[in-house]
Image (cartoon, rainbow, N blue to C red; front, side, top):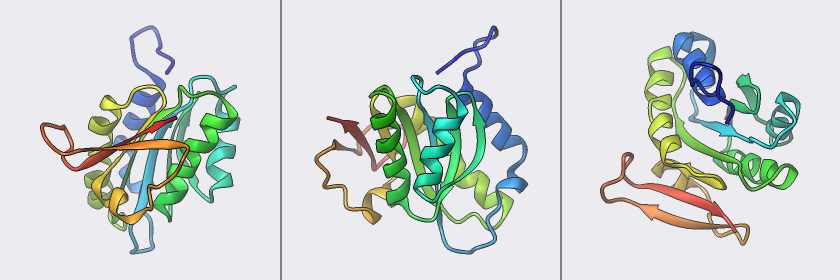
Length: 164
């Protein structure tokens, strides 16, 4: 996570840009979408992050250096992007994923509001996912462990996925 002279990270820049222009993030389809906020510090820049998102049929909404906000039709694809970036770069990849309806700007804002709290808790090699994602995806995978967090957490009923 690169920081500029004023202490702002690439992830901060991505989130700030998204908050300033929620209308650009509206998805016409009325099905829920999954948003992934991810940082791959060892990536060689935006290209590899965008490629990992594209390989999982995601759409990059915002990107800055090694950090990106992307949307997916499937929560499993968001998790797959995290795993792909970890395989392509190193295990320092960290992120957060949430799911929700995004066919109006206020719904996008409400969905994305969970990301900062989840990301704040995420350390290197971790992906924090919201309750909706944890219940929609089979989390039985030998590449990561799952820890359910439900007491005293910033975002109750979230799950922490950690690379093995």
